[in-house]
Length: 155
Image (cartoon, rainbow, N blue to C red):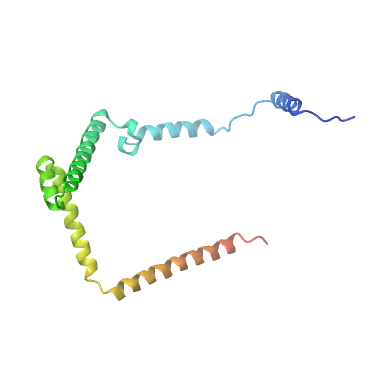
């Protein structure tokens, strides 16, 4: 007569049955694949790996530059909060952080160029381009859905 097993008894039964099974053999190609992965990992250059694998000198230089840029940004924000306009704040921060001032000037020049170029394009052309991109995007997804249905349709 079959009686109901408690969850603990069922667990013990399953554990006993699984322990009695012979161990599975690894595929023959596993060792060669593992060794190839280890060799490949050793050939990856340091800048394609995570931060902890970078050389100590590079990590230190990165921290110095990042801290300097963060300090320049905080200084510029604090100067602007005192009522100075952006140009005067950048000039004062630039006297302390010349690299940050040069980067700011390059970014401001690039933003001015882009705004000038985009501003010279007629609005109708911009809207037409946006509509074209949207239509191409919808077409891409429509064709993708049709291809998926065609290839993976169950007969």
